[in-house]
Amino acid sequence: MSKTARGALEAEWDRCRWLWNECVAKSKAMYLHNKATGERQTCGPVQLAAMLSQALA
Image (cartoon, rainbow, N blue to C red; front, side, top):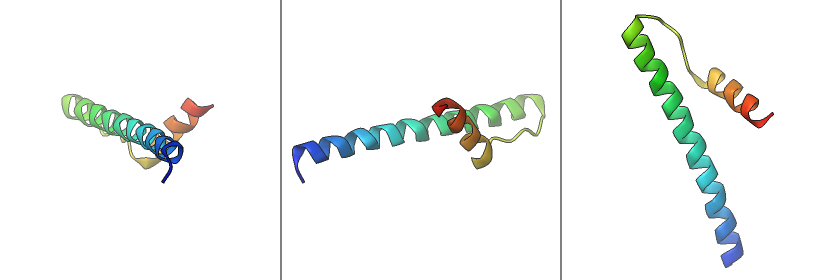
């Protein structure tokens, strides 16, 4: 693998990892909110996909 290809792949991995971390943080925040308030809001794949779509728009 060339240095250029490797660099591009690592950059893409960094973006994917950042996105994953954001999803985990949103999900964890919703869990803690629900635990503290007794609410039953969700933050699953559908909600996370909608947030991603809004962020990219």
